[in-house]
Image 1 (cartoon, rainbow, N blue to C red):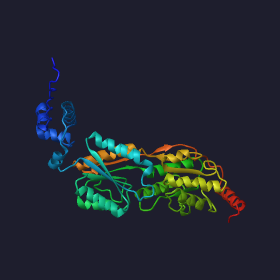
Image 2 (image 1 turned 90 degrees about the horizontal axis):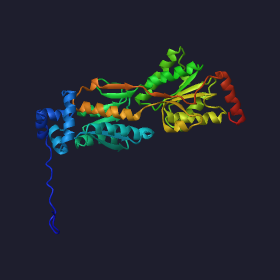
Image 3 (image 1 turned 60 degrees about the horizontal axis):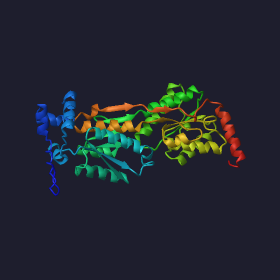
Image 4 (image 1 turned 135 degrees about the vertical axis):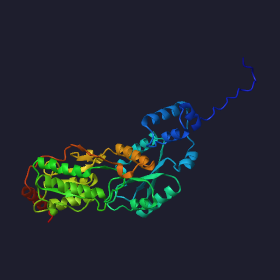
Length: 372
């Protein structure tokens, strides 16, 4: 029975469960338990699962600072975004980070994100974050054909995984979407609809994805038995304004294309303005296919037909691959590829007029508009 005014009973603090307690409970060595908790590849999946389940039941939580001292790792993956790039990754950033964060959290790791204003700033941040032991390795998005970030990290022995490819991917972990396959398939779709003059709008030069998608376009032409015509390759475009200029450039040809394939959606949106200026209808007079799956594409009239990338899944895969590289798996054996998914909408359709007929309509529209 309690008494008024009596001092409250004190609750003894539950002692922290140590790795020794966990090892004794499981009849395993401390080394085995530690390696299981840190996902070392030499530990059997069954043992790893048994150790993790026991750790959850007993309430074991590692001391992060002690773990860092013991293993030399802080259990954090790094990501430096280049905000000076044309879109600063905005269309996909939320999904990508969600996948990356989830992948890290599943393994009791964290994600450290930083932004850089210039390429030099990117190199500085990569070195700074690793030297200050803020991260154990990096995801490198939006890769260049010749990527200075790779050279910097290789020289310092810093673990990394590419989201994309470079000219040299030997001994390099990576996850990439086969954009070249999507471009070849886009050409095949258009050929199947009767199009024989198919234009192409590249992305910004220097990026590896630009080169790969261009190669995919040419491969698609070759597979269909169509000759490559350099006149049907417009100026590079990554913005709506540039995409409008590129479309107009090709539609003004003596033999304009009846369909256009864009490397990126943002530029493809510009084709709608060019078509409107010339009294043409996208999806009927001119077909347009693109790649990215940005939300704005679904709001166009007609909606943009495009190839979509699952950015959340990409983040999940990249997080797992980087952790495996950090834990010592051979980087060159960790290369994964996925396909983009086609979103069939209204911006493409059967070829309804010949290039000559299309050129005549464009000329008539320019005459009515008072332009030359």
